[in-house]
Image 1 (cartoon, rainbow, N blue to C red):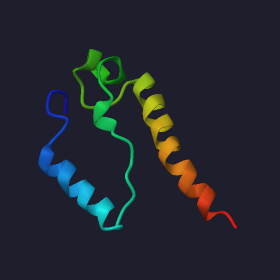
Image 2 (cartoon, rainbow, N blue to C red):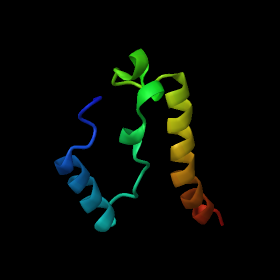
Image 3 (cartoon, rainbow, N blue to C red):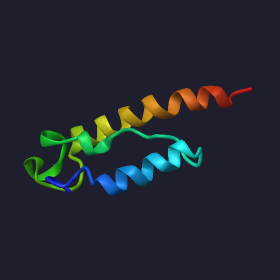
Length: 71
């Protein structure tokens, strides 16, 4: 939520999953702030521009993996 985006405990748990090979790292969507959030940056959910940026950041992470899956 705005103002409390980067919980060290949650980030450490996510990093542990990546380091153990149980999950791949996704984009840091906590970094999407201001006009990328609803209610003038005060909301928890993404605004329209925020959703587009969210999708673009996931494409950057997922596209290379997908390319490795093709025969």
